[in-house]
Length: 451
Image (cartoon, rainbow, N blue to C red; front, side):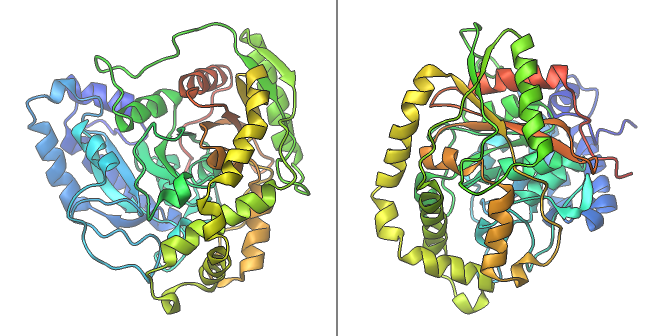
């Protein structure tokens, strides 16, 4: 029997549609890999072994099996989105253990496309931080298990990087897709506002949070994004209509004052710029006019979003770092709700993006922190660790504009390095096209060598 674990979603779906594989055997193979590896990785809070096999049988019996874009593809779902019959604990002991009556719209779209949900993945409490650990488990980077997978979609990223699923669903309110993707050698895209339904928590962190894919290839990320956005035409995801030259600004400078960028990430930008130039695009060194107030704006929105999510929970059951974060955010809620801070940042950056189509930056400033009980450590220590390694993601949540991460090169440890591509509204197809060019010229091994 063929082992489908480690194959791409596109490969699996094609095999199932063509009757070279059944959804049951594909899902069973991935469940066996989860059972074998997840004790070392910590990706899943819940594995739906029996339910997933039953659902795989249902997919195999569908009359439209030959038309399903994700036929029989196992998928993992971040534990802050509703999966029918399962509770969404959001990484916390303070959330109710109540099964959801129906799927979140993004989960429903994946299932309608033929995907099978094999489990719910670990997150930090209330999805606040860029490391994933807490009362439900610790997600480690499969490429470097001593290090965190990142957060907050850390469990989803770890599951894909370990080959336990080919794709996973996560979301991104301050970098929560892009941080773990960069750590784990994956492709992801945080779509621009309104491209994919959000419905994450109470108000989507004031509209900053977006659902999106985690995948091992650009092709899989493009397909999954199209399914989530309900944007498939004749079974194919959209591509950029104008295939001409793009104007790319390359900037290794941190958006947040005082944060230095380590050499591997700065070099990755320079080398990726060279790749895009050789592909025929216009690339120049140019720094966006980030305002000096960006750090405060990001902090206000980050903490205010947490404050709203924690509002109806028993604070005695929350970790200390979460309580402090939420308490700080309460004083910012009214100001953040006006939207003026985000409007100001968009106004500041819009002239830059009239001159350039896309911005190329490092994905991170340095490698991720060590895996450990960060949820038991103080708020300041968590903030220092998060800010030092992930300054490049918040601007694109604040603007609501799309941003993508693609692997590029390696760190001295052998773990993946990565770059970020970002731009104004509507450039998702252009970002995916550039990432596809980087992937073709600088391929990265799809899954970590855990076996």
